[in-house]
Image (cartoon, rainbow, N blue to C red; front, side):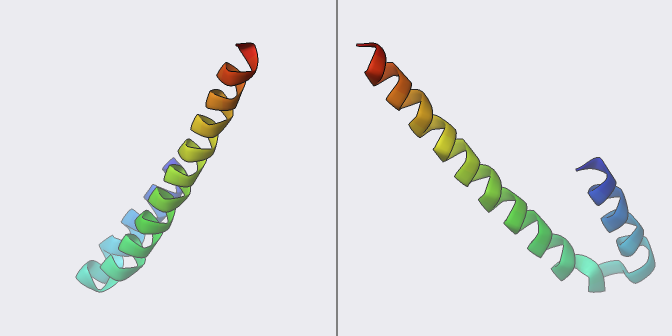
Length: 53
C-alpha cells in the first residue's frame, strides 16, 4: 500500500489536480475491497461462534 501511495504522490506532484480522479478511483476501489473483506471476516467469525455453541 505504501508503494502505491508513493506512486500516486509522484503523479500528483507532476500533474497536480488533474491526477485527483486517478487517486479517488484508487481509494474508492481500495475502500470497497476493504469493506468486502471485513464483511467476509465478520461472517466467518459469526459462523465459528455458532458452531461452538
